[in-house]
Picture: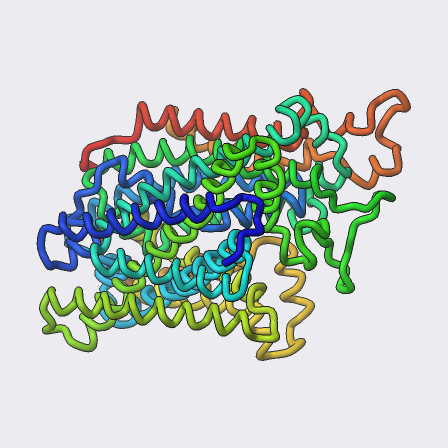
Length: 534
Length: 85
């Protein structure tokens, strides 16, 4: 691969070292295993302390969205998207209020997956278990695909050349797959410590770097104050972020992300309630500051360095009327998220020489870390969902612990291969696969949010019934499907106006949640509760 | 009582910070572009900044401080580290 990025061979060295460290942690995780059991492979023997728990929860929460998507969104829409940072303290509170209870019940009953707890509570061995596992798959699969794709995009930026995308995506997928297969949750969590540290450092470093490029904080904010009015107000340049959309997206994205299968299993894996208590505080403090003082500043600085308007103050727009990034950042409306990479590559080495190149390489490796840490957690959770909730329950209940772990490893290999195949196939397609995958990612959170009513009822209210839970979940998932692009692909223009106006009012996940809660409450009211309180 | 106050404060911070409360301070870009909301002597960015920072950014930082204050108080006084529910 040729070196035309302006960073010389430094990214090769930093990336090589990073991947070696990951492999070492993976092997160490295998050597520290206690036995060949599901509890050890999927939950690290329920022994994780607060440092590992904090960082693995952070690393799982933030995907490549944190370092690519969020600054890209601020670059496109302006400062209003910085308020999305306020979803992080909500997620922090959920770590303690939901996580500590989930951990206790999970430890007392030996649960491994979310479906274990929900199926047992509502006494639904088949229906609810399969539904909850299905919702988990709807969340995890697109997330794995998105992260592998992010590895390809980053590789293309760092090492421009033929097949750079495919090589980057394959390398990310292969190394992630190897260390999960070898060491299970222990390896995933330990590598997440490295990746979480890089992620936090990378987010802050990126913000500091952009402020530095623009001459320090005073000069930076003086330049920002001269941005077009739409960049400094809601609903932002594209008109997307009305306060209502921002509110529902912030609130439910946080909660949906915190009860997705990989996080749920991290709650089970915590050693004590105190671990989650500390993790909640660290999460709310550190990550929100990383957003506000890190990546969000990159997007604002990006608008100063690479304006969205021409010399006459008119926005650059495409034929569909969508706002376009500056030509030096990207050629299409889908390329706003290149802003961080473009700013670092083009400005830091000029400003700081070799030291700047090292800093830029570190932030770029942090993007890789963000992608890998989310991919590994979701691959690991996917393996648990399929092995524990389907294979063990319905296909071979008599299988030994050892067999189940090997089946889990096989599933990790198969899903990784499938995800990589989809990424490479999608790239060669004439359609717009990247756009579709981003849509899938947003839908994934909306699907996961549908587990919230069940979770809150199970942990706090104890009023729902099995029938109410199944009906609510089905209605919630069906609502998300109706509001997704898949429905319009199948049904054409049917209900187009109604669905369009619904989507412009509040977030898709919030609509699903409204109908879910309503159905859950009504059906539970008319069916006799059979569930004993925990 | 304190617990209810904390819950109220936290929900208020979410509603005000990243929610409809934003309407209270959100500058209207269209009005400003026409120059109607600014005096002749004010700089173009006057309605969009506070203390030299974008007003929405300052608004977000303020409500984050409220959210974190609530979390810190709950951590110190209510959240328990043992397994008793």
